[in-house]
Length: 320
View 1 (spheres, one colour):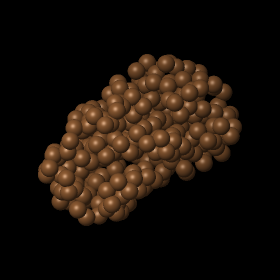
View 2 (view 1 turned 30 degrees about the vertical axis):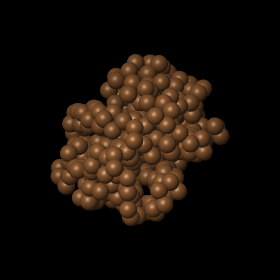
View 3 (view 1 turned 60 degrees about the horizontal axis):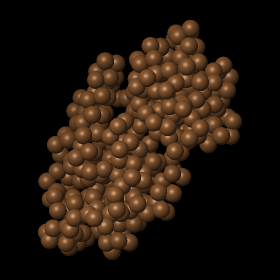
View 4 (view 1 turned 90 degrees about the vertical axis):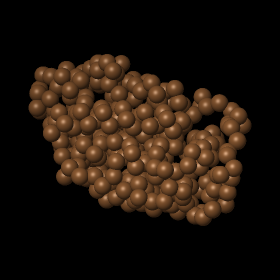
């Protein structure tokens, strides 16, 4: 995705050039900050929360609310005071919820304001070793020769991994069978045991099993090669031109938060992203550090809502 490749944190300008924060935000924060997290690991929020605490002297409390695919978490932030003391660790998942659920109690675009991207999260296309393929092209040829006979694991109906597989089906002109699980790990376990044939799995969870020889990694889902797996080609360059799927993490705050507070928070997040120990830890977690302007994150959100909403409508998917 062009917007992400342009924003790699390694290419960020010197942060000493950031404009002065307006006086209205000089005293921010004035009390502890809640960093609300939906489903999935909270380690990134804890990493940034610790650094914010060290910089600002105010405790950052990580508050995980995984229910309803993260809807509860986003709703809590949307309804919080717009004073910069409640943050949401946003993900690509939030851009699918309005299309998956008949009633969502907030509008992700109108009720939440973007601050910055923190990371992109590439996925790995991998197969069980018994599947006689060693590239994406070979997997596509096999799937075309055996329509409806190959199956894939996802982390649940309507999950971004489910949608990514269906996007692959559509773009590659193949028909494979969805086997939903409650999370990534159960699907990986069944892939390792040979109960399913392939997966587009989050890199952090999938790549170690490939390196151990339990499964065979074929490609990464990002549009450009991933520094976390430099030996793997992209799916786009391996038979499905233009295919791109990367999840992401960012920070959103309640709508109405002042531009001055957003500017101060944004500048601090970029400083944290530039720290060598933070970048090293993020790469260990399978996250690729990325910073952005609020406007660029907003554009990414809108693009995701359009992309996944269209596919969800075509598939007739509803969250379970």
